Length: 462
Image 1 (cartoon, rainbow, N blue to C red):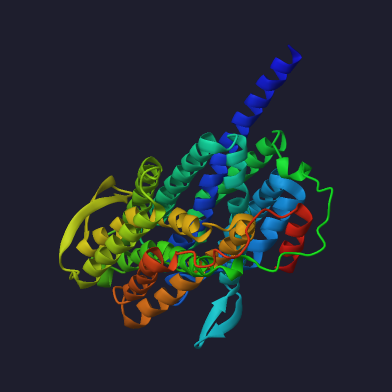
Image 2 (cartoon, rainbow, N blue to C red; image 1 turned 120 degrees about the vertical axis):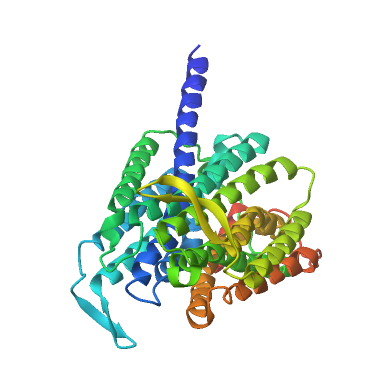
């Protein structure tokens, strides 16, 4: 009887933990996708600053990727998640502070233009927020898998979490656009303060819930009784298809973020897009469709992945995405179409936007399947080196900060649509990887499992 009650209690605890993880999965996307729409505020003050916050958010991955994996190994899922949520709340709070502090204090100048302290505060908040999402990304997937008991149930929970991630990505630019409306000389971070406080509140609530929930930590109880004298002579870096996959992830996250990010700037620029009323709100609503289509794509992929290989999915997705971006580049802005929008006066409505915007949001269907496909192909046949590769992949998410920054620089100097040639180049690389680069040509390297002591030696070496 006691055993039955214990099982029921654990079941209820796991359910609460699963729900909390779903919220955290959504928060990962919220914090990540907050940077680009907030960039419209700073771009109104500094022409070059549109993707600066996004860069800081993703730059944090480069620094925190491998340490986050180390934290997971040493202190476990629960403590790492709690630390991440505390850091996330601090990062959002600092971004909020940029709306009330430093607007009149010059810190340095760029091209003769003074850069105020409030912008520096915002960048610091975005950077700290990047630490949070990096750590949460490292925690949430394996935690959901463990809570589901692994296998099909664990994978199902991760797919559901990924869907909520996409849903948050859909709503974030929409909410920011609704709060900002149209960019003016007086638009500031204070205009989005309600959204930032809601985010802080969610982090705090999730922190409290996780604090009282039992989280299984099976890896913390694994102790090795033997020590191998010699560490492995190879690592994940010795596999060509893994190295090429790491580059692929760098480009993938860059194009996933840059495609809707630059689209927001394009549509918000009334002189170019031709949108004369509530341009920023319209841009946020249109960009939200991109993330909504990523949600649709991920749900669809979860259904077909049992029968359609990652190689086929990545090949088709990259090919179709290249076609869509080419259509966007060569379609004149004068050709327009109605797409969902929002305004304070009329609520949800339809707005006339360039047809190119439709082609670009459709790319979301393609990018939705790319992360999983690239990862699966890149770790194929790695065996004991898979965990090393996972840490490296997380570090390479920094591409989501670097490549959009480059694309934004191209957009400022040569035009918004011209900048999408960079996206085509990245998609071309992914197509190459799907067709040829993903083949494992290093099958002679032993990949049988190591003892825990040897695995720790390799992690410390990296």
